[in-house]
Image (cartoon, rainbow, N blue to C red; front, side, top):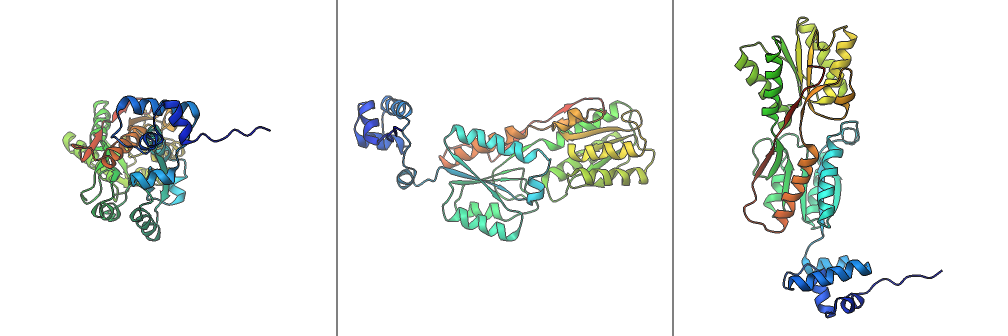
Length: 336
């Protein structure tokens, strides 16, 4: 068997017609080399399949070329059938791969794991840290920012910590959903709200309350934790409290799917007896029975935007916004 030799820096230099030192500067990210020469070196690297020495590159650039994505949740939540986390990871991963960066996933569902994340980032193992799905006024993002580490969050940090973030228009999406219910003649409109230690839960409940107050209608609230099981329990509670309710806005598609199951068990027809609207536009919403009207939030786009913002922070770009809020859209299907 013939073993192919690994391409060397000298081979790249010969192919590009430049010196070894010039190749070294280009592959290590130096901006002092003319664009035409960088292009020639890059082409030679691609043609030969040359793989730069990452350790040497890190010594030159003082970068690891790695970005951490922190998931401050339990493993049961992250690896459930909730598609929020896979979509965020996919979006961020695609963007970072295109920039030749490594995505490092870290769980942070406990105080001990928070300490591990902080030590890992402070030790310089990654060039920046992205947080997904923040709960409460978590001090970790602010702590890392104060230590000079680039940080960005998905979702506005609870408590107003001065940390850049990317979010979606939860409030506006819910207002559109509840106004749709009002416009179709529903008058006893309940909600299954999400956790109140998360901005998504807070803003979606605020949108429901504001729209019901605008319409002069009574509010009926139960709470869940974004799981299907909590949606079942909350829907049963709402039906027991107000058997005449004729609509429910549910703060996530997974909880809405649970609400549909509870309504079916209670022999309530959807939408003729009770209209149901969710939030997310997960794939499950298209195949539920009946197909679920929902508010589409661009989760993968949120991951991509977080990654782009992080790359800008690392590269010292000026004028980056502290907050990016992506639009949501009401998607009307058979359930409302």
